[in-house]
Length: 321
Image 1: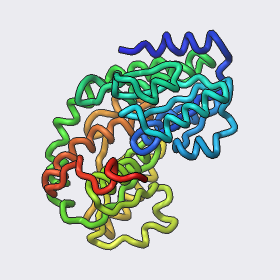
Image 2: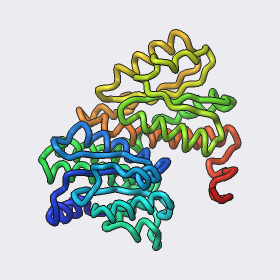
Image 3: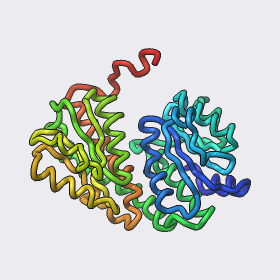
Image 4: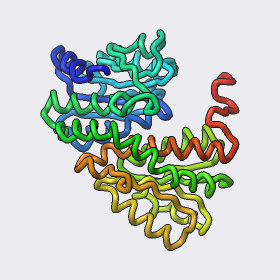
């Protein structure tokens, strides 16, 4: 297991840290939303940013500089836009922490001051997953630099996630089977969420439904639902809502109440049914991780039901783009 605490100690011993920024693309951007959200809500003075890699390259956040930690991620290690974002960050004097799943030489290793090799949740426990490590970086930075971030509660929650996730993955199978049957023929599915669950909904939209299943999709923040999107609601409109366990839960419940009245094709994944609320007040920072893990069960079953493997592509990796 990579020692994140020691890494952050080394970084803060060399320079004052005033900013921690996150940049990636696709699922490797979505995974950063929870730590970004955590820093935004918990930090006293440390600033943060959450930026798609190519936007970071062309329009770098002004908060990024020599007093920054910039965390980048690419599963394969060679996503061109993310590697270039790492180069830009280094030129500005930032300390770059690279996340990758692959151990061979790659672009992420080339541009990073520190490299963390992560495991998939199917390979090991939560603490050594990509999102587990990224939250640790945010936690340790806030704790060591300014003594903020509900550190003890976050550490305790992190350990509980090691057993909570595999238990919930088994318990949720009946829900996942029902979803795969009920949604297999839908041509468009709307995903919804708030808080850190919003990024799991966004990831499901672009990475799974659109990329891996070729299903048209759009993500709707539950706080925005009643400011336009609810007008598309019909009885058979397909919705998948990822419920929050935190302060934004009333936004989700308002949307659920409306859809229960006017729609008959809604699936709600509720983490509280599977024990996430046992993490206490900090549970909202783990909503993304919970939903991503549970959707892994849903997605494999949906792909099987539709006879459309998650690995199937029309354009990605096949053409120059």
